[in-house]
Length: 279
Length: 293
Image 1 (cartoon, rainbow over the protein chains, first blue to last red):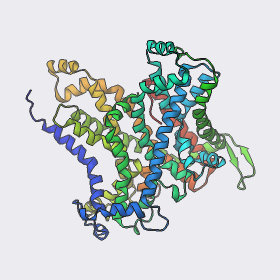
Image 2 (image 1 turned 135 degrees about the horizontal axis):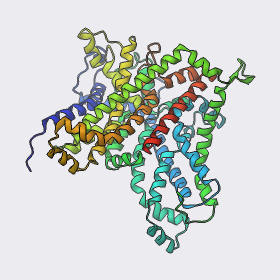
Image 3 (image 1 turned 30 degrees about the horizontal axis):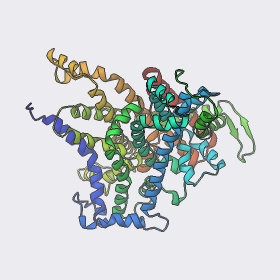
Image 4 (image 1 turned 90 degrees about the vertical axis):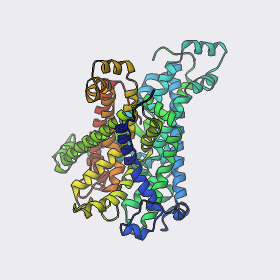
């Protein structure tokens, strides 16, 4: 079939692509340039590839001041936080959905609704009292404090519950005939049937964990626990007259890169999962 | 929910729900309870006596012109972020749904911004719009438009709205595109035969079928704009200049964490809770859908 060239579609989509790509390109190009030139407003959109070393330099030495962590350290904290939150939320939610669907136990529905309530209580509405609770648990300025309190997930629990309820009776009967115990059943049956959902959730939750800003700001003032997002915002909104612009721009690129790679690499699961998880 | 039960015993399932319950009770319910409790009480300056004062904290809050202004500002902010992010996403999704060459590449190039943190997107916009260094900020000044968002409140608000919307477009795009793709080709063809094309077809056939998606996104975007743009605003303007970009969440943070006004900020937290509960209830009542947390 021969189609006419659909130029309005290409035009609109190219403009859209540009709207998102341009700021990142600008920051990437800026990172490779002379900070003096940027200061004078002579920012060229053509990157100077002989200065890619700036990325290595911020990775190893941060932005120069003594109190700054090297960027590799911030990236490690971010990656640790994103991984623990993504994997932790999935594990915790699989276990609770499994318990609620396949067992009868006292206060089963109470437990289910208690988990459900977390939907209505995002961090933003609990800013003040949460700090006191965290202090009581001695979780302020700890890696556990950055992650554990974020592990509850009503959405993931509801999703897995739905998946488990949709498994055909025949399959469950077959597993039962094979004499599978509760743990075997979970590992051999439930985890494989929900693998695609887990992959999708992983992408969404990894991005959620990586992009946290308010939570680390509240509970981890210790610079050794600075995530890359905290690090770059602090640098930019603080005294940015002192830090060379190319250094800040290099850091911004490094803050964006890892979650973008995860989303693009796992795009297939992500797109399908996002629309499924949230319906 | 009642259908499945295949295993006996209660020790194992209880052990399995316990981790999630623990986190929920101690880090969600307990702080929320504390916020509600302190919103109805007043503690003296030495922190020795706490007494119940009923709704006084709430009455003081709404008597405060600053709080009412923040409420109005948040409403405008949320409405514009939502409108901008949804309109742009819908436009892109409609064209990405065309059968054109390179559509898979276009999609990838429109989806990746989902991964950019709201706070970091603000950093990108700062690099573009900074009055002396930013490429666009300088351009504005050069062509005679005095641009400085750290002095001009309207410009600051405009900038955080644009930066806030920018981050949310990809998410909306994914949903609009999925919605468009679920419209059967036969419906579109039938419309075509009846002579409905272009914008008329879109308005009379496509848009009604997209209404559930649109309504779902409306709620999600309002919640996003109200709560998750905290990082965007902090990175760009820290709520300023003055209070020009101080939304409700930024105000809770400023009053509670920076100015240590426990009673006032607890009352504000309770108001925010009511807003989230209201929006979530609307979502469940009319859609049976939910958002990720």
